[in-house]
Image 1 (cartoon, rainbow, N blue to C red):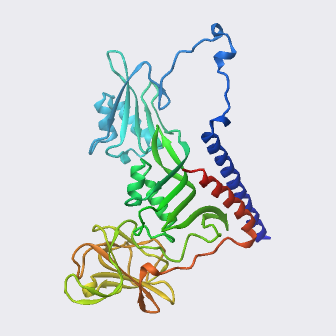
Image 2 (cartoon, rainbow, N blue to C red):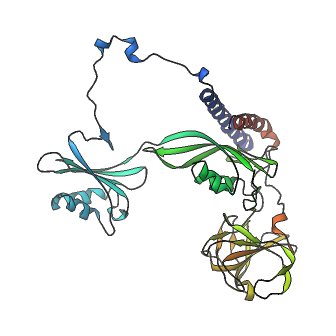
Image 3 (spheres, rainbow, N blue to C red):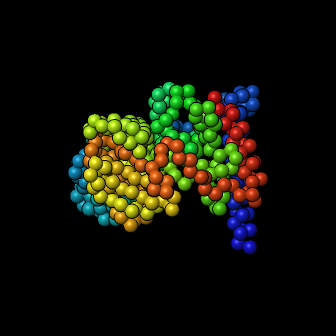
Length: 425
């Protein structure tokens, strides 16, 4: 009975996905084809012009009418407290004390941050009396200090506008360069690299690789506050198509490929987010310091000191410490078959020590140049049954695919997704 209830819940969630994607797809078609748009008459065309009374405009900021007020904008300075700010704009000390008292139930005034914006509303008369002070604590949340006859303090949230968008690009140098050249939100670089982290080596992108993506971006006051949802994604890497299709299974949404296999694999493709390969796996490499040829059974990723190093999979740390030429190293046993090693670290991640279990993506250390090293880089090693293998050639098996009982619903979602991506140019 429990299985049936969970299955039915997943079906309802996936039907919602299909319905939403259908609406999104229809909206894009209407946007693309102007002939589909409806035209409506304006209100002035319906009523005689002499029957329309134009109301006097009321200008609002933070929900405050400022037609009769002057506005002063600024940013919190270093070591500036709320009492300092209020004193600067001639708020009486008794009022300041009352504001601080009232704030305790709304906002901890000790958490005011340097550099955050504030706005002061003052009367336009000769007294220039401060009527309101508004402090923006986050891009969405702000605190209003109402200094009227009855002092009040309250917290409000700005309206968030969500926009559905599409984007595409062709790689010339890197994904970051292409996203930047297309004037897209650079957060998409991280989103795409995370979605396809188990399928595509983003250090090995080729000129001519391409992508399409359908996503939702959120705005406050016309300023982007981030990407809130990826509805669909496609990447063509070295002539091979990779799809990211969102689907709810076991009460959790994740991305699947065109065949219904999970995009999440047992191992990440690389232990660093963004870097470059400076040396590959070799049985005979000229050592840059020792000047002799010997095997280099790993991949070197050149990156700045302090770049986070991630565990490529779940496992148990079996070694940490300083190991001669390897410098500071972490070694992880993932299962009875695979082990990985991370060398030349500058320092270890929080709580990293032998015997500790880590999850895929956990930060286990930071790039450095310890041991025998000509510069900051990560020497990454991969072992199968104790024998070193080329990390770039490891093909990890996927985790649980779409189940047979969910296959029909998945095919519906996939159909909408592929049609949606075909509209992106």
